Image (cartoon, rainbow, N blue to C red):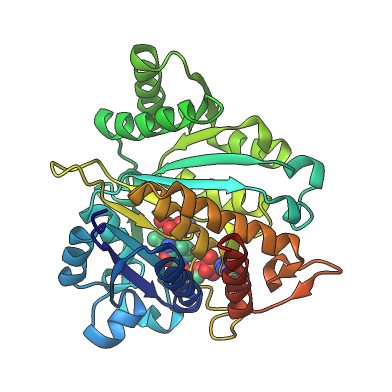
Length: 372
Ligand code: NAD
Ligand code: IPM
Ligand code: MN
């Protein structure tokens, strides 16, 4: 048997709870190396406020190049109120926005899956969320986040005008819709495309392009369309009606935070952001929880590490086709939750409240049980 080349990971913990939850992934990486014979070559670097403190900018070009060279990027979270004074052009959040843009990571997969043990953790009724398994595919390099014109201008009377522009082209819509249709084929075969074609031309084009692509190539998948405001309501009313949701950058951001509460907490929802396969056959990919740096709880050791850990499980599955190891991690998380351990954000009566590192340790101990 020839030795597998080491898997090259760029790890970017970032700010706030980012480094705290990333530490718990570190334990799992060590476990995989020791117990499953996998080999990772890990480079770590600074992004966000942490990079501003050291280098005066939210992300260095050098880090973008390291991300390009890696097999996969594991990202924590960025954002730190202590850097509010640096101005919009230097804000910590630019780190993740630049990485998405520079690596053309256009398809952000945000799965909202309810673990049986957490059915009661959602603020919705158990009957509404039990068994929920949906996938939100959010476009991440276009739309109003990046459209021009943008800026703040001063009007002749001295007052100001803030401008952002929602822009989508045919090819931008088509490539993300293709990801959604392909995923649906491996799931329950249904895609719901979400926009506001009743108000926005970009939404009208979105709907047309998705419909055309469906007619041409994906008639085996069931396609429906929904206005974004209705989708927000339907996600709370009856989330299990959905399988795959495909939508633009801003709507996807909002709807996925909403969907996270169906699973019990923002601290539970992982994501994978993928680009198009390059000439070398490698698909650029970045994995991150959908939550932010949570400055309100940072430094207390109480953050839920599960979204970060499940993002790493997605990394194993999508970037290295390590389905078995991905499944082991997801099963370990599920068993630990079933045993009654809870971080504060998913705590409920009768359960045992633990901090970040005890939760991480318990997941590794559970992995040990599978490996006998
Ligand atoms: P947030 O996601 O950081 O936190 C929202 C709420 O959820 C907070 O009450 C927080 O304590 C809680 N929460 C989040 N993750 C948790 C976890 N793992 N365990 C337990 N509780 C958790 O959103 P915010 O407060 O609006 O933003 C804070 C900063 O993070 C901002 O600077 C924002 O721009 C940034 N942000 C970054 C990313 C990213 O890096 N990808 C994502 C979202 C927000
Ligand atoms: C997310 C975050 C980011 C976004 C911010 C930090 C730029 O909210 O990943 O969901 O809006 O995309
Ligand atoms: Mn967000």
